[in-house]
Structure formats: C-alpha cells, structure tokens
Length: 230
Image (cartoon, helix red, strand yellow):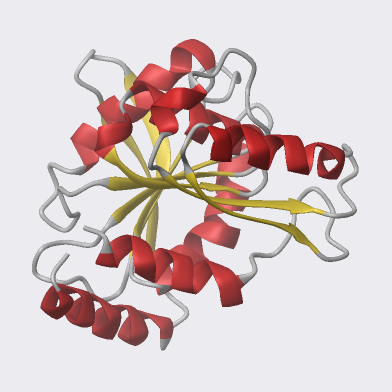
C-alpha cells in the first residue's frame, strides 16, 4: 500500500471510529463449490475507493452461530470501527474451521471480494482460541494470499506445516491467567513460530483469562504496519 493510500485509509478508519454503529448483518453465501455458508458481515461506515481491507475472524470452540454472533458483536465491531470489512463465518457442522473445513475460508474470501466495497488485496486471518489455530492452519496452506495472522489466543496445531509461515506477520497473545493453562505453552508456541521464520509479535496479557479484551495499544500499531507492507 502506498503512503497516499495508507493515509486515506487512516482517515476513513478514524472517521469510522467516531461512530459506534458499523453496518452489520447476518448473510448466507453460496461458495464456488456450491456449498452454503452463513456469516456475520460488518462493513465500516466509511469505505475508501479501493474497498475496505478484509479480515476473516474465526470464532473459538465449535464455531457455531452463537459463538460467531458473540464474536461479531465484540471483536468484529472493534475491527470495523478501525476501517476493516469483517466476516465472522459460522461453522456448517459445528467443527470449527479446522481440518477439512480449512478449505471453506479461501472460497469465502473469493466470494466476499466480488463485492466492490471490499478490497481484493491480501486478507488478514484472525481467530479466537480454536479460531486462532484455524487461522494458522488456513494460512499455512496458501501463505501468499494472506496479510498476516491475529492469534488471540492460539497454540501451534499438531502436524501444522509451520515452515510455510516463513515471513508471515503473526500477532500472538495469550492470557497469563488462562483457565486452560495455555500460558504454560506460550514460550514453546512463540519459539515454534519464530524458528519457522515467522515475524512474531508475541506477549502474555496481564491478569487475563482465556478470552480477553484486545491490547489495542500494541494491536493498533501492528495493524497499521500490515497495511504499510502492502
């Protein structure tokens, strides 16, 4: 992204932040493989000429509709207020977007980017818990298609092709009071990603459980740096 485009994006994002009401809706789309996928889509209030950058935000647990809806009201709206087009997909079978369901995410992106309101550039993958692990899996299959990964939190899945994430910007956060004790695997997770050559911004969130509010003081600069890298 050129400095002119970045500046224009930041103006639009700042304008969006001034209003608490992004355009949100639940929709169903037909993908290229003829399957149907439900999602919560949120567009920022102001969209630049080239379209808003897209983030796919994957819920934790089973990825069912209730979890996706909660995530869209929480983190999804925060991202939309910062100028991102947000898609929170609903797992079609209650098995999140891991394993075979990885294949649905690129198809969803292709469908969403048919909309001129959404940029056709590289996409940010993000996820909470199981969704963060989904983001790592999806990115490892076609890393050239993705702008970066927000894993908040995540661990490195077994059998992940970590080497495919070389050069990938990854924002990793885990609560230091995680009820699932993921904080005890923080160092091994960071080390695995860094040893693969990923560009990792990792940290423990102070006094935070498994699900936590974002550290916007560190996440905002990371997001801006992603856009500058395009």
